[in-house]
Image (cartoon, rainbow, N blue to C red; front, side):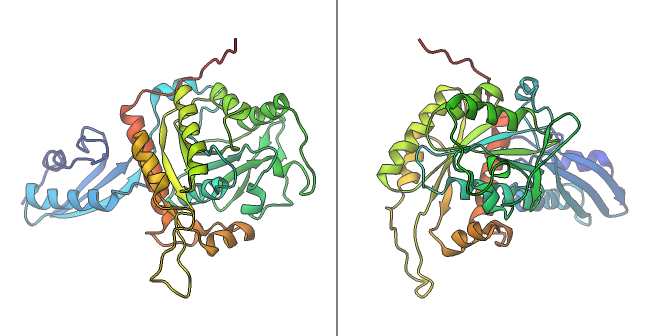
Length: 362
């Protein structure tokens, strides 16, 4: 039996990426084909290491080789990834040319656990194999130093007077909390806050990143507008609890991003339910049930998942060790990270890019 590379490629044309709706060959995902007798070796480069369809795609490739090349062929599929970016976005991204995707994590209301979600999202993406940065843009109430166990650390400055992000758990980090003492309050007016956020983005050495996660402060004010005017965002993730008082503000957050041409990647429902440790068969919806899920459906944006009200999540944040570090492959933050990366890849392939905007007030 003689197997050719053309036969392998012809077979893999029948394997469709379920997110992008095209075959792997036309998407240029197939590389390094090597044939040794009955053994067929090749690499599939997905658009993100956090692809939730990885196992399904690998199985489809194996079946295609066995059924369409030869019944005795033995496929050896190496699953790899090259994180994509929107070419139009990259052409606008003069300030952060090495950053492929910039994702804002936002909430209309404070106290919904947005920073906890942002920290665990960044860790889960890094754990999957992506190169990740996290910038804490909440100047008045920075949380990153505590959540990453870096309270007393300070970033270095290079010879060009640029900040060098700290690194923990595979995530590059910047926060106002690294520049002031724990007990010091930042008492600044809006223009100074906006200037600090710009410095984190434009006067820092981020280097090449697959994803830069931006932990935004609550609301729809100066910092949010500064960010969309400074860099082109790949999209925004909205965090809310299920209760109406939070959902009202989450709705405003979605509206704000739509007004400034930023695609909403989806909504995450935090503190969705509570399961008592001594009664694992019971589930209590303390703040209401399916509020964020229903809002996502109403606003026609993806629902990215539920995060339970769980002691381990709180303890991980307080101890500076996000729970995503040790959770299993089917853990909640791992699944949410996969869905966020999935939405980014879909938009990079098909959606119009976000454009930096000029906001004028009459």
